[in-house]
Image (cartoon, rainbow, N blue to C red; front, side):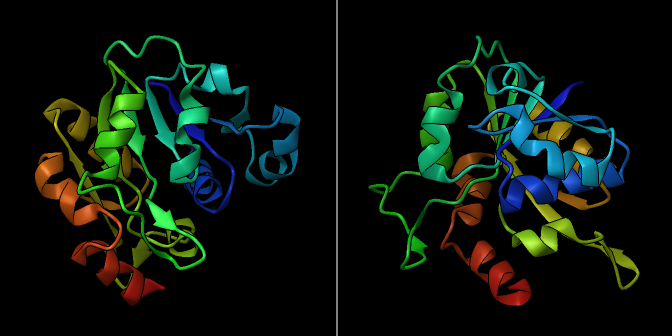
Length: 198
């Protein structure tokens, strides 16, 4: 399975760091040219491979680590998804208030799923602050937890398997209307994690 991270900000860089630490190859792309990632790649090593956005969007599992409002632009050049996995690591936040964006009662991941028709969409990697996500997941004799939810059980399992390989402890919460609701920014699970680790 091939992996890609879309976005090289705090969350994207944190994820790239974990791939590198675990010796797992990953493509990384942003809205600028691959050359803009030279510093990050030089720091993290050969497992992190800079590429163009259209190339990264061809991976078997694509992690969206851009701001929620930037997702539409990031995925517009994608090839047919054909059942490939898109992991939504975004949080729908209104800045500078840092409050949940008003989505009219809809889940942010449901909105993202409409932008990637044909993909199997999973919510993950969104409940830890970037600095915590970038740090060693092994802590005090245990492992940091990452939550997974989505409407396709096999996509959830593949994402949980990746999380395990990255050294975290995955917990699958079920479908989006269950687990995704807990992971939505402003929900109790996210708020608790941000308060605990922020």
